[in-house]
Length: 111
Image 1 (cartoon, rainbow, N blue to C red):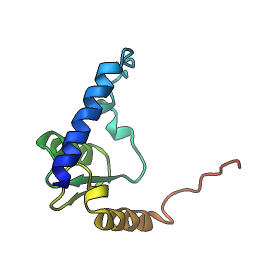
Image 2 (image 1 turned 45 degrees about the vertical axis):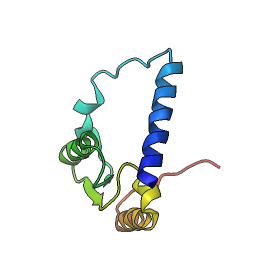
Image 3 (image 1 turned 90 degrees about the vertical axis):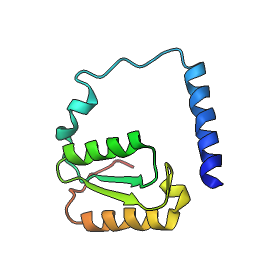
Image 4 (image 1 turned 135 degrees about the vertical axis):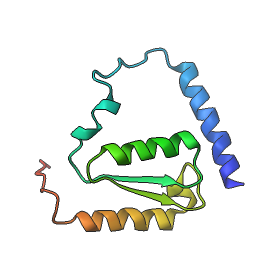
């Protein structure tokens, strides 16, 4: 039931977005798909195992083309694993971040 509600909501949002949008952004040159190898930071690709095939294929593409990327498929969820299985999703992200501590440079910010 949740999956159907989310699917209906997503369809309405996407339809509304493309109906009211009149100014498409200019395409990236070169396209982002050809620049994935430039990503040099730890990357987690989280996907629901029950998502649509296109999304699963895109997750595989990201995983294959971003050096050192980690991919995790959360079982028995579709497109919004952070909502459908939030505890599992949060544990996945927190474990990933915890594993990165000490391996990422500190970034100074002005407050």
